Length: 329
Ligand code: MRU
Image (cartoon, rainbow, N blue to C red):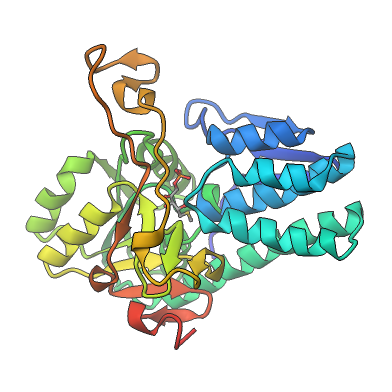
């Protein structure tokens, strides 16, 4: 399968290196983090983002804290306060917590971080295999936000499916919407796919319905930040609208995510906490104000797509209708 030619996260004892996603695509800059607080800030400010990548970064954050000799319970609480929606963060921290509660030393915590990283790579590979079977040759696949190698350890979730279909020799075209307000589609998905030589066309968010109405979209694949037991899926704001449009025009809408994104404790998506981010993300574009001073703003960073609008949920365990996610998992 085509491998992304960059490294989103890398850890060596006491140092977490991140590709700074706030600077892409203008600059490919890596930052070295040696303090727990730096890791927490990097997650909050989206230097690293995307559900699986946030989980891996948090796991390595505990390893960094252990190297610093910090109180791990406090480090854990700090990391849990960074971003609320992606369950991968809490899943990874729970896993690290079980290890240090059982007396794991720093090296063992680092090994656990590496294990989480390796498992996410393998999950992406398997998601790619399961999902590629759903993508017909000649398809134009819409994706929203960035669910690629930048959002995971390698390959991605939605983009792992696209990469796998492409690697199988299928002639795939990708349509990436820009994903306001943070522009993950324009800045990250377009950059990542172009580097891999995968055909990608960027559109404004508002252009999705127009293209779908003209039969120019075969299907959509997105990632997820948290999937409830009934298959409701939280993902980047705007995903719900994309799913509505695809369903209105009779096209399948797929969600690809590793099992670490499934929150079996939540009966439905109504219980998923939705992060609200700063108004500045909406009122400004790269520091330039585009809205009047004093305007009221809402900036929910995620929305929840009801399971009834999701045709298949693709995990490393297979591609199933939402209703079969837990029973078939
Ligand atoms: O706010 P972000 O950029 O962290 O949001 C990311 C998304 O919504 C992704 O689609 C999701 O995390 C899946 S990543 C494989």
